[in-house]
Image (cartoon, rainbow, N blue to C red; front, side):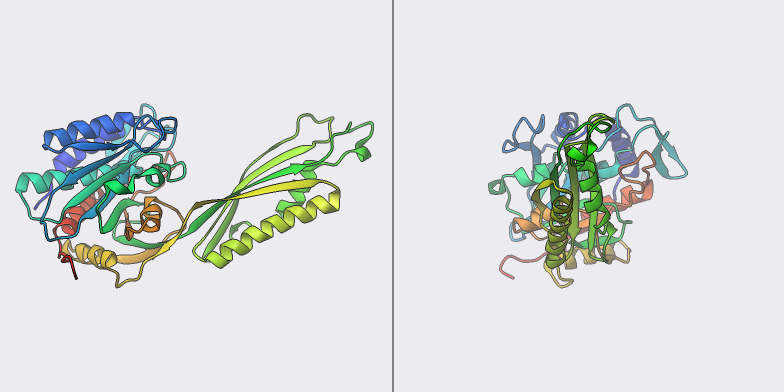
Amino acid sequence: MSISEERIKANFLELVKLNSPSRKEKVVAQWLRAKFSQLGLSVEEDDSMPKTHSNTGNLIVRIPGKQDEHTLLMSAHMDVVAPMENPKVIFEDGIFRTDGNTILGADDKAGIVALLEVATVLIAKKIEHAPLELVFTVCEEVGLVGAKALNLALLQSRMGFVFDSSKPFGNIITQAPSNVRFYCRVEGKAAHAGVCPEAGVNAIQIASRAIAQLPLGRISPETTCNIGKIAGGGATNIVPDLVEVWGGVRSLDQAALEAQNDLIEECFQKSARELGGKVESEFTHSYSGFSLAPESEVVKRGMEAMARIGVDGQIASTGGGSDANVFNAIGIPAINIGIGCQGSHSTKEQIAFADLCNLASLGLAVARGPFFRIGD
């Protein structure tokens, strides 16, 4: 059942050189088609993703297995954050990184390489395993868009394993937050800032007063809130009449999430009333959180697989979202696996070669069992 470290390294170096920002993942999709074709496997493209959102759809690769076993979903995403173009990859002391001018792309190309190795070993060694659906999604980094668009009719999986958490390898994510994005349009009244400022209502002042009253960052162990973008004003001699504010709230606790949203609305409306302006707010549900019990089948299978490769698995929660949120929401219990990537979403991103190999070994252990019999 042994993996090939040489093959994993070669595939990873090939893959991270492919520039695949969100909505432009086709180059990775083509690479995957070629690799799986060499294994005699067909790649199905899910056409439910609007072409205006990405230049390719989600990919699904099916690997038949024992007919009396449940089908397992294993997933990774094809897109990366910027900057990624023309990375100079350095491998030193067992660590992959770049020269610091681009990201590495281990998030989530480490997951892709691991799943490719799983398929390669299972087919080459003719190892008995559960039926697998390997799902490679698009646009994960811009709101889990690909997973949300996935055609459920194409899937038969009973449980899922997403290879995408920034936690150290050995961590199994069983709890992740819900996410709400908010937008506040703050309206004031324009006036000449030197001649008649009293005739104006400063929209920047309204927004600033509201934000100053809001708790931001980590509000509690379960809840975070962030103001991520502000735009408004036009010139220093004009009282600004419009400011737009964008942000997000995440929480493992639904009541706390709703309470923070209510507080945001209250602070902005109060500030507008006090200063004579107007606020229109929009709160958009981005994705739902999930919480899986330690005794659930998918968690037990993940923990048992860790033990079989000699790793002391740890159950953990996260403040970030992933495709696992979407799979859980559509009825496929799914855990997220720590891939060991450090510095994700930055030019200091790096990953240990040992963790790439561990991910592939874990995927094989998950695929092999112990199996859950249909009807159990």
